[in-house]
Length: 376
Image (cartoon, rainbow, N blue to C red; front, side, top):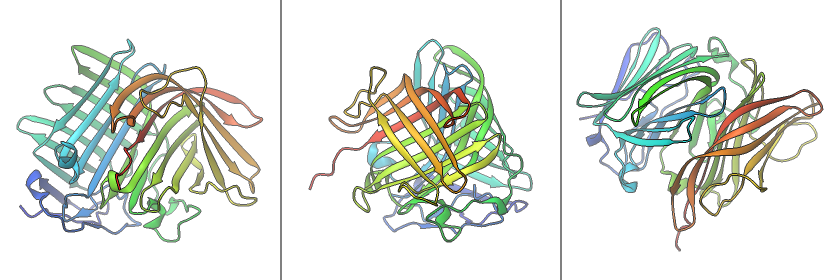
């Protein structure tokens, strides 16, 4: 089947993108569709489903009490077979209040994306099983539903930001055109459609019914190359405390060897107040710093033995300095990537606020990954 890919889907346009696992057949380099300033850019961007290109729609949520959480990832991933996974799949991870954890992939046969006047939706299915999401075109709400042999559940995200305004897309310190504003690192595109949301979760796994209200968000990723080609390690954070939510992604690149590439956004009561990719201390421009913490506490199972993070956000021209101090409290998952390296998820306790001002306690989720060194 020839995949029907249309790369620029504006609200109000009724279009589809339908692919199956059989469409991931060639080694020809995939191309990335253009960014559309009049679109939320949720519609698939990758054309020519190669053996390395992938797209991801990612959602995460943490309970208000900080004792339960979920993440779910919807993949169109040509590199999947190289790591023993289906190209079309969803990945579901949960940690429950009783400390038990659950993680499962759902291997789909096809993926259908539809964009209409008010909503856009994605469905990953195999027979009578499916995982799907629906997002309003104005990005005010997202609903995710799992109906598979292992997972039954419904999750609703209500954005704190109000209706999406294309003109409100923020510049970053290294961006000059619309496409590069979402370029985290060479060839890696990262969008943050819903940074700060209230979440209602109800799901059934492992004989348990889990319900909670909490906070979370939704991200988008796409690139023509596999993670193993692009990075040595990565750190991902979403944390909420008081009126603040921070989301950060930082990788160490294999393309420009050893160089860190990061981006951080800070939202207060639904409004973006800080966004930068700059990690160099500056007298005028905004910058951020990311530090690993090592003290008595919870850590992952691999050589990266940190017990938390400190993230500082500094805006000299505004005279502002915010800090997020995150301590790991629960290990969510440990997945090896090599003899001593791995991928670990955490539930975190958070203390955050403006330095010298009121500090708020909150909750967050964190993921960190180190890949095995490439043999030369």
